[in-house]
Amino acid sequence: MTQFRNYKYIKAWFDAIEKGTIKVCREQLNLKKYLEERLFSRDDIYFDEKMVEDSIKIPASYFPFDLIPWEKFIQCFVYGFRWKKDNTLVFNRYLTLMGRGNGKTGYAAWNNFFMLTAKHGITNYDIDIYANNESQAMTSFIDVQQVIKARPDLDKKVFIVTNMVIKNKATNSRLKYNTSNARTKDGKRPGANRFDEIHENENYDTMNVATSGGGKIKDYREFYDTTNGYVRGGPLDDLIEEAEMIFSGELGIDREGADFSGLFPFICKLDSDEEVDTPELWEKACPSINYNDSLKRKMFQEYSQMQRSSQVRMTFMTKRMNRPLEDTRFAVASYEDIVHTKEKEMPEKMEEVIGTVDFADVRDFASVGLLGKYSGDVYFKQFTFIHETALKTQNIKRQIIDIALEQNKARIVHGKSIEVSYVVNWFLEQAKHYYIKKICMDMYRAKILKPALEEAGFIVEIVRSGAITHSQLKQLVDNLFIEQKVYFGDDAIMRWYCGNVYEEYIGNGNIRYEKIEPETRKTDGFFSFLHGLNCLDEIYDSQPIKVSNPSGGSPTFQPLVF
Image (cartoon, rainbow, N blue to C red; front, side):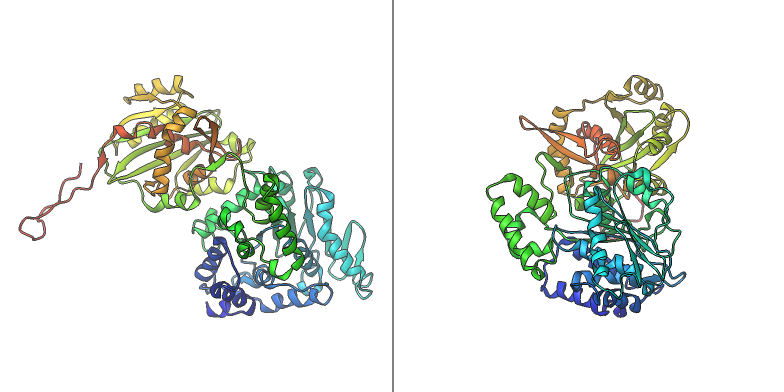
């Protein structure tokens, strides 16, 4: 661990965090912990110090600025860490999420320049820049173009430069820019794809086409350089969620199969909205602020303006502080409280449980579950049936599905539809282990499903679902999560369901639980859980049986557990 931790650029960044000479957010502390505990301790990686040094020193001879500490730190993970077994990159996807004005575009141009050169060591290493408009896509391209044009020893001798393409003559590597028209991107063989300001992306259309050609060239990389924005449920939210799952240990370079992630998440933001009123903490979101007096003056000017304008405040919080403000949308629970639900599995012995179903469409998702109480805590065990059509026609994050399949929390159903028999048979199997007092479901599919369940011997109760019911359940839901009294076991898709729900305030003090995004963000498991909460008071709280021996010795028999 020491050899990696003590490399000068890593050491400088981590020492500054530990000494408090820079102010950083929770995500930076989590990244530090992730690297120290789960990367630096490995013996199957090595560090290419020369490549890191070249990536810093070679562009420095030509660019009109130098890299600052956070940029030098990231260089170590873009170029340095490799697997011993095959010399491939440990990290090959890089999220740089920070406030506007921190120099992300100039830093991108620096790396674009270096990756074209012979010192990078890879021929035909084409780099494609993607953005939502041409002006945005051209920015870092023009930065590289101007650096080359300013040096006669580079222009025409080393590079061929046009307004569309920059080509290194020795490596045949090209830098190009693109807009978000996905139809024009097929057939590429990129060395790197750079996605600029993806907070504007509502879907994966452009990104899917661009990345489909990746991996054909050595050291393929993907860069995501962005501030936060106003689009929710898009690719940026997925990357933020992936980062959280890495920090919590669910994903990472030390996991295998669907749980592996090669994402390097460098996130800078305020930890709370209140911190905006302490300018010394702005560095959390803007790590370049103390290296750029012009940026600092501009931010103080905007801060003053936001005291008188709610619109300026919303922009400042979202774009500068990376704290998106929304009028009526509130998360159903904090990420930390949702992650805590995996700490305990549902007990094998409970006196009685409530069955739950959320089943709206026979060609989509259907979630079934069991809800119980044990020793003061609430437990929920769910299983999801996923029709194959949903995965083909909807832009659902496949990684979370793969994890759910691996954890045996979901099953992909082939054929025309999710048959009622799948739901009935699941409950019949669970009834071998638990006494199911009743099954709660809303009106969707009830006309078909209710008789089938009753024929199998279950009592079915139709519960209401809507603003009035949600408002009545809100305090219970809040308490369960805030007091960390609810457990789902290690169920990634259930945590995903909860994270996809927000509270919509609709007036008269009422709320309604809604999806963050109607198609890509599924919530079936949460609503299945919610249906069961309607009847939570009707079941006993199972308690572990304790046996005491009046004589003070150990009991000579084992208690029966019913």
